[in-house]
Image (cartoon, rainbow, N blue to C red):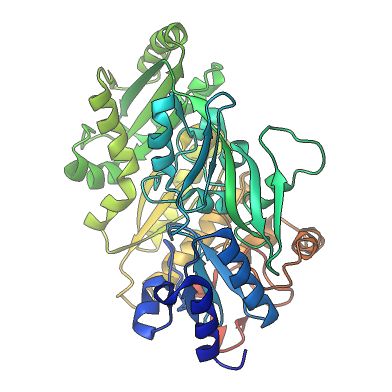
Length: 482
């Protein structure tokens, strides 16, 4: 491409004048996702159809221009952060529910459909879409596919990959292909599963076939109040050890309660060391029996108080506190860095103590709200980036916490993905040979380094120590570590 002016003209011919963003002041809106990373893209183009996505991809491919697909920008690992040389391609205009098959319990949607909107759309059929990230009011199904998003109710039901049956994809060169289908466990290689969680590095999903589930006959939600995190963590281990797998099992610590309660008024005691949210769902008789058992176990676990939501309004209020937690931290600090390392449930307390002591030593605030049932931690490091060195300090602390998660037998990410945030830490879990083998998958999809490049895997020889990109010193113009 000779210059950006020619590129803008050709993109406008594909999607229309108003759907190509190129003025510097307008591009600033797209410089970041929900992570601390940021960079202004070269251009932003907003396609409305698969055909338009294909044409944009083909034009970029022919001119060697990287493309970064984007959902709602709620990702937390820098996966949707663009490069200054790239075209950023949000799919937010593609927000149609194309089909609902009530008999087979499936739906076909475009990637811009908001997660919660899909469940609202299908509830008239007695069905819903199970994966429910905390950002489900804003995040899109396409973004969920890219990150293999989870959520509180994935403890019992699984994450996004367990609910996606098939995909229409646009490859880097503009080729349109279909993988998977309308049923689970189609014969052949699981290409659908390969794409889900690939963070936009293999292909762009333009149609998504998802599995729907019946709305449960009964739902029962408990709030268990504890004087300290130690007792609450022990309660989690005990519940799962008794063979109970609730639909959701979430924990909030005192600092999170202090942020959330004055904002949401969910009924969390301000002096509690921690609270557990436990939710059961299913058939009426099953939930009735399990509710009595869970209530007794929570009381025996050291909870000073156990409440049951008696109405749907009470239940929704309890969950509003959990789902609104991240937004509430603005009451405590102007910035936060949110992690999602995973540890075995039996190592929860050890990981939490390490993170608490580490942040205290470094003068950083720390709050915890997490999927306790599956050991998916969400340490929230609170800081003020206006103070010199605080961003770097927070990022380094986050890196040390991730290292600890791996040391304890866990993994780097439970649902947020690797993106830019964790790519420098990948050698903690994978050998160079492992990563080279995984990169061959990109080659097989014909990526040619043009789809969301420089994400997930560090470049060979460029990472001298395990430091995320935000905290590293970058060689201007090359993106290499020095």
